[in-house]
Amino acid sequence: MKIKVAVLGLGSVGRGILEMVRRKPGLGIVITAVADSKSGIVNNEGIDIEGVLERKKNGCACGDQGITARDVVLQADYDILVEVTPTNADTGEPAFSHMKAAIERGKHVVTSNKGPVSRHLAGLKKMAQGKGVRVRYEATVGGAIPIMHMLGEGLRGNNVTALYGVLNGTCNFILTRMAAEGLTYEQALAEARELGYAEADPTYDVKGIDAAIKLVILANTIWNNQVTLGDVDITGIDLLTTDALRLAEEQDCTIRLIAEALPEKGLLRVSPRLIRKDHPLVFEGTLNAISIQTDMAGEITLIGKGAGSIETASAVIGDILSIDL
Image 1 (cartoon, rainbow, N blue to C red):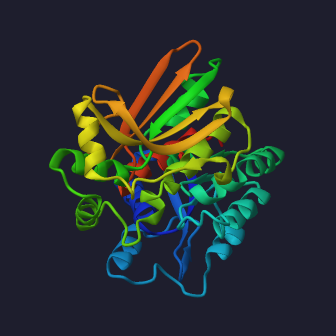
Image 2 (cartoon, helix red, strand yellow):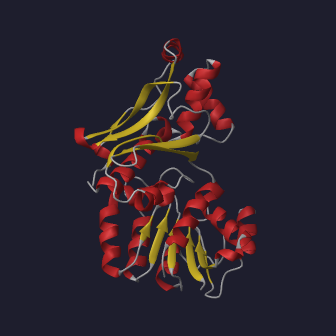
Image 3 (cartoon, helix red, strand yellow):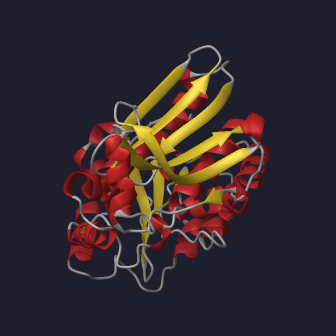
């Protein structure tokens, strides 16, 4: 059986998904529609993926400028909508409206879009349940790390009592470089920009907002407590000094931006924390890690690539293939 998929968003993640579907015909996925910010293509027999990727590589619109993302949602023939447009953390739009419209048509939804999931997860799940469809969002947290699958499948029956994580690779890279080379925050940030690890405007990363959004998604997934970004105590890394890291070094410790959730204390926090160098959450570079404490399985830590075109595509494709049609 072929799985018909429509993809909204042809940035690095969307292109990565198309590339992996093209390389892996054995997955049984057929892309019947795509849309970028300017155009769209609908072909119920399957679009020309190679042609779309070539046009995007050359900076062109993906297809017909008379076809919008909403046209794809409402008119295309697909089993699963993949929503990977840019995140708007404040409103969740337009992704939230796309997802609602697909669910109303009785379509499953898979997304990497943190905005609508962090703001509207409970509502989306309720709406999907009413229509007998699924909403999957593995790629919203930790890139290629299969945390949602582990929580939903591998740890069934466990009570999760605490969660800790390094959820932003940009911050981890900056802190790694500051500690290893004695760089100032500004120097390490400049290096991260040069290497493509930091955006031109890195505010969401370095202020801890990106990690906090991911923490909200994890907390609402695990404990269904409908918290929001406003419930998270957030401190970023932008005021850290080389002196702070030097003092940490003297104690055989280092500093990492840690997201933590302790439900018994009502604590949701993202902040730079002093931790020992042999701690599982201390590693170099742009990786992400999530450590959860459970009543039966004990403590489990997952480490992997938290961003990247193909890595995030891995999570999206895993979600697609996990849905029973």
